[in-house]
Amino acid sequence: MASSLPPAPAPDRRGAIVLGCNLKVSSPNLTTPLVIPFTYLTDDLDVLIVDDDGAEDYESYYTAALDTLGLSYGVWDRADAALSDDVLQYYRLLIWQVGLSYPALDQEDRDFLTQHLDLGGKLFLTGQDRRSTTRRTGPIC
Image (tube, rainbow, N blue to C red):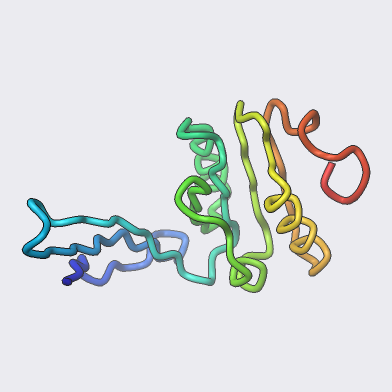
C-alpha cells in the first residue's frame, strides 16, 4: 500500500490549506491499483460548507460569496462520509446546503446539528425541501 501526496501546498489567499490526496492500494489480487481520493481540511477554517445536495453544484454559490468576503472555508461532501465529533470542536460555523435533496435531513443529521447548536455552534441551513422534511418542533426545523 502506498500513498501519493502532492508537494506541501501553501495556504491560499485566505490562509486555509485544503489538501487533496490519493491513497493507492495495489495487490497481486487486483488487476489495477485501487485509488482512493480524499481531502484533508485544516482545523482553522472560518466556515465549513456541508455539501449534502446529491452531487449537484449548489455549494458554488456559497464558495463564491465566501471568496468575496475573504473568509476561509472547506467543503465536506456528505455523500462521502458522515460528520464526526471533531467537526463540532473545530468548525464553529456550518453552511449546510441540501439543494433539492429529499428528504433533506435524516435523523443522524438532525442529531448532529442539534448537538452543534447546543455547543454554541452557528448554522446556516438551506435547501428547497428543508422545512418539509424536518420536525416542526425543536431546534432544527
